[in-house]
Image 1: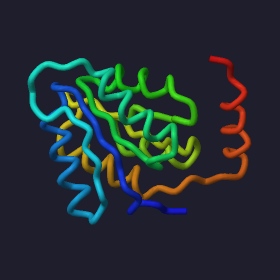
Image 2: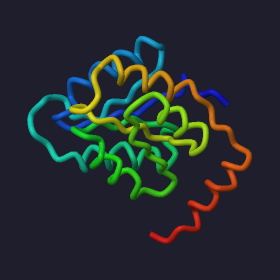
Image 3: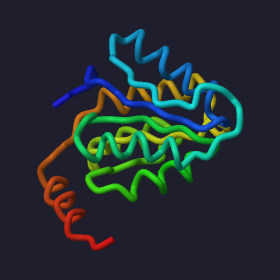
Image 4: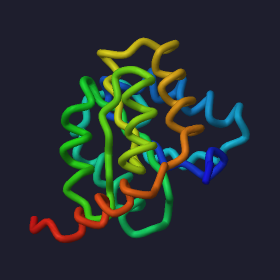
Length: 150
């Protein structure tokens, strides 16, 4: 199923604020409803605060998909993947975005605002939004996520 028009929750830290604004504008331009949980400036903040906001809303089912952006994307992906039912994927190019959807049904896209230029980031977002989950043998693998003790 292609759910590229599903509402998206988005968050970032100060290092990724400019890129988050570009991604948000792109999503809105595609007719996608966006819930922006901040940050709303380049003033220094702690990325876990924003990672938690997005990941918790995806984890509890309030949003099917989210996007997180910090300086490298590493911290946000670590925070997000602590939440049950979250499959956050740090993507650095379109192929990883495609495969994170096709094989892993990723529900949070993570990018690095200091690592990824605007044009590449928007292409990553486009591919991630438009790529469906393949299901099949990959669904059986995802079920094993639920049996992993944290």
